[in-house]
Image 1: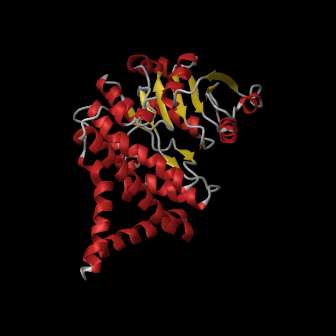
Image 2: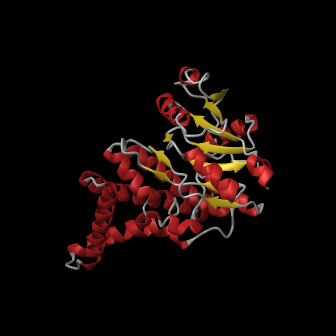
Image 3: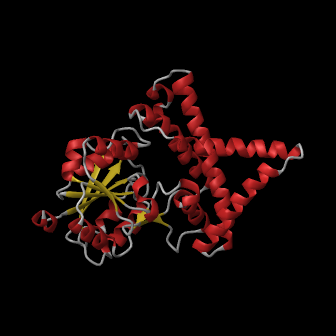
Length: 337
């Protein structure tokens, strides 16, 4: 095993769709790594209209970078294509809207050489340069008060699910699982289940975080999270036994909020008071973590957007799949095309 550890060769796989500016920031952060371990970078252009060819060519003499072109088939299929072309024996998968702290590769290398696993996942954070909306969205997506640590928390690492914006996969794990499914939403969660089915070891590396920009408008954030909500019942069907009551929480939260407002008009304010206490806790927690009052207020709004989007998408999917008995591809063709 020690011989294997010493021969770890990283290939970073980055699917890109119409984001040349963000890709340049990511490549620059890779270039600035304290140690690069002769890392290979594989950029997969997924049928973009705004291609990043010129950006990549700025780095061909600075990084060991491959630039691959393909038709648009979605991020999962693009990652698979990149992994088949990669020369490394350990594949690090990043989204193009991420930035790496300068010690990211060192942390991953040192962890895997002492505690090897066939796949790893890491959390995400907001960079100080991000705007208030981005920081609030990051808080909403990562806080224990909102997601319960499913997206990365040292105290809840056992519940952590590997996410495609920051994860690693050995070449062996890729070959045994076939990589990501061709569906466009929830493909990383699906891969989590298939890794477990193959008895492949996974690990959470809490210090291997990335700075994740996420969406930069409330509307795009709402649309993205609604798709996540719609994908969850589909994943539950694909992997029987994976359903959890907690997946209903955003929908129940929003329905409860509506009921609290109705009850308030009927002179029963107590349920609404519970919600107000929760929102106050969100604001205070965000203020303590971000040290910005505007981010704290935005965080409350981000939670409302997140829960409304996820809950409505989840409900729509449950109705189509279980009440109308429609198959997933017919219910949400955009997820699979």
